[in-house]
Image (cartoon, rainbow, N blue to C red; front, side):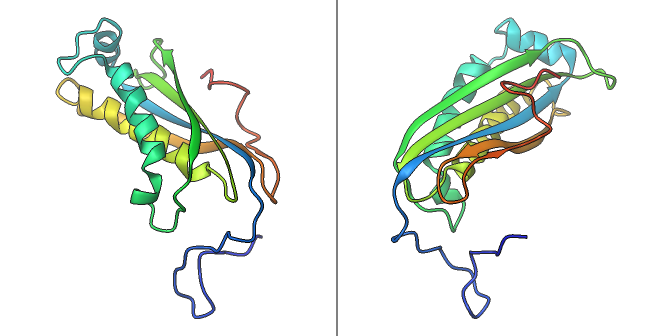
Amino acid sequence: MAELTHFNESGRARMVDVSAKSATERIAVAHARVSMQPETFACIQQGKIAKGDVLAVAQVAGVMGAKRTPDLIPMCHPLLVTSVNIEFQEHPVPDDNGQCAITIQATVKTTGPTGVEMEALTAVSVAALTIYDMCKAVDRGMSIGEIYLISKAGGKSGTYLRSMHMSGLSSD
């Protein structure tokens, strides 16, 4: 198991010193899922949510979330994020619980001394929270889940690819 790096010799939290690390291209991809009633899903698809275009607003919110990650996560380094792409996949067929879903995938890039995993995870989380916020008047029972890192590339630790995730957006 890898050593926890965000603690100093006294066991107190610290921001890791990345000043000696080389700048390399870093890419991270994360996933989240918002489950909802079929009626809520239909309102989103038909543009009938009073607050506006749900996925357009969630897309902008996800980008903003990636850019603001160090303001939210105390030990994250401020980074020059060079690219954020938010994609949605709609799942209109209700699952075994009678829920439809929207899955979110964020791809975040930078060139720097540390990775963008937290930025990608924050992006999908903020996009999912935005979907909830925009639709809560219609469906307070929505759930947000399955937030995880799909992959990361770059840096000393190399490439990580989650084994349980298919390439591209989740097809479930």
